[in-house]
Image 1 (cartoon, one colour):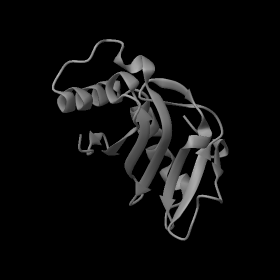
Image 2: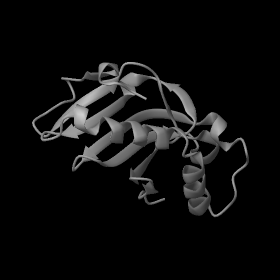
Image 3: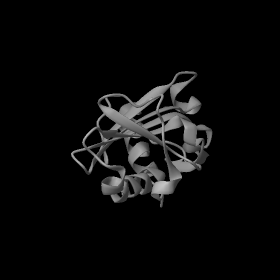
Image 4: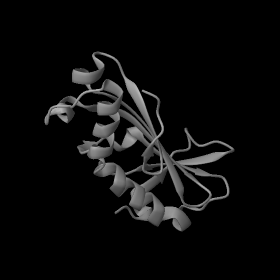
Length: 136
């Protein structure tokens, strides 16, 4: 769980609409551990205080850390086939944007590649809460 002290405001990515924060230490997403905190952006709308949504942010990060089954189901449905047990081994995460709206609703966009599934290309997985909303 992140504390307020473990989130740094990113002035470069913040603007009039959103304040952006980066964790100060590594985070796990889709079972990929030790993701560089610089590629993780937690965005809060201008009327939201970090302290007020910290629990929601932590709950969402916990969900993202262990939702491999959700992502597996997404790929299996899109590819119309079952994936091998080690499908996730070559996954690379390039960017994680988490947006908190209305004080607690979380959205995420994760830029990634899974060479065994996507070849050399990147894909972006979009989630609203715990539901994948990307089109395959």
